[in-house]
Picture 1 (tube, rainbow, N blue to C red):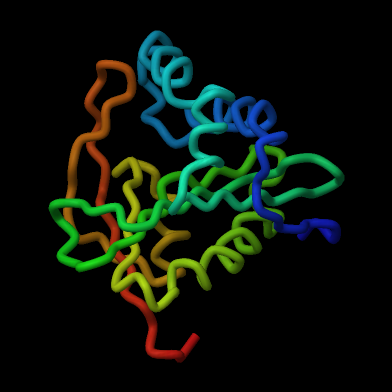
Picture 2 (picture 1 turned 135 degrees about the horizontal axis):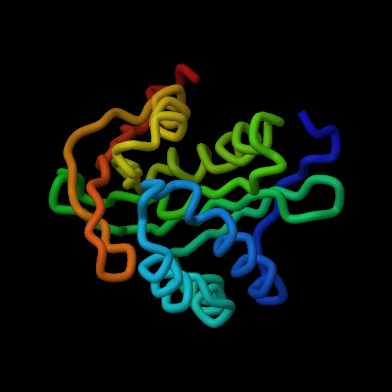
Amino acid sequence: MHNTCSIRPATLADDHVLSQLAGRTFPLGCPQDTDPKHLAAFIASELTAERFREFISSDGVTILLAEAESKLAGFAMLVADCPHPQIAAQSPIELRKFYVDLPYHGHGVAHALMQAAIPILEDQRFDAAWLSVYSGNARAISFYEKWGFKTVGTHYFKVGSDPQQDFVMRRDRSRGTE
């Protein structure tokens, strides 16, 4: 584990580093045979500095940054009151993005980031948390299962114009046993 890993909320000044990290790490969670043009189209439309400024400025969106060695090592984006047709809940929260830069894989950054996200996911305002993860990403699925997420369905997530099958995973608020 990186001794200097710290977590803080994102600010507007983080827009470019978030965009760069997301652009580098997003392809890691996709099928290996994803067409580079589809990856490029998704990154160019969804992971830009402008989009991150919109997210950071939005009510109900929380972006947590993990920093290690004075560098952005990962981030998590949580979106409040974000319904999904396969999540029966009155007020769900989505863990929409959870990215850790490759040099920090296996060094506790993801653990620290999820530890910081859990109090938000467990907030009394929300009765369920959910996420979408590529169905072939066994490492990520195993990580989410360790944090109490369970697969409840599948849907398609478009990367560019390429529909990819994702698992929809749900985590109910704990009863204070964690």
